[in-house]
Image 1 (cartoon, rainbow, N blue to C red):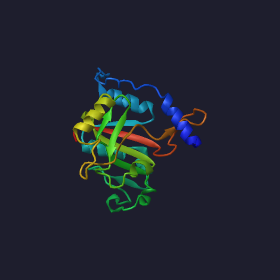
Image 2: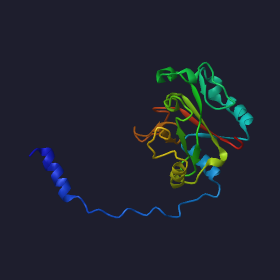
Image 3: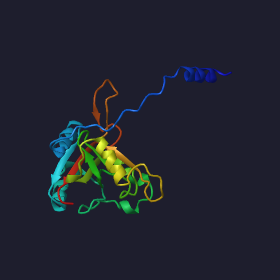
Image 4: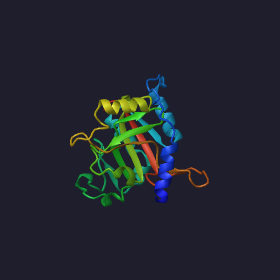
Amino acid sequence: MTSKEIILGSIRRNRPAPGELPCLNESWTKFVDPRKKFIEVLESVGGKAIVARDQNDLAKQIESLPQIADAQTVASLVSGFGSRNIDVAAMDSPHGLSHVDVAILPGEFGVAENAAVWVTDRQVPLRVLYFLCQHLTLVIPAASIVDHMHAAYDRLIAHDRFGHDTATSRHFGVFIAGPSKTADIEQSLVIGAHGPRSLTVCLVEQC
């Protein structure tokens, strides 16, 4: 008998008895103003929020962002704001996106308790764009914010956005909360350590 077999056998003999799974039918926290909470948490994790009345107001506010003014390359998949020096639709390799300064991309909804935004590759041909750009801007409907992650997963299941494995419904999806960051080194928080250096979430009243 090998050492591996001895160790695994010992684990099997001494593993704890199975227990009942916890009940998730609880009265989870709900916020009086989910949008306000979302913005508060987003700013606390290093992000920035923009509240726009409509697409025209959104375009004006995005144009005034300092990262847009300094950007050489802007990749946009949001109506009303065009790309600059790049044709995202024509890209067939993620390597062509390595020089993108600002990406303006659609999100589907936000979560108030942790300021996470659910994004997918349904409208984004190369999903690495969410992570390769220097500055990321996500646009979501202002009315789409849910209170907590339990409600978020309920929404994903209800809208057939999660947990299915068919040719028509299986897509990449991930929650993004704030810019990239790390605190591994001496517990000192560093923003933009291994991904976008900033995250701006735009909440649009009338989409």
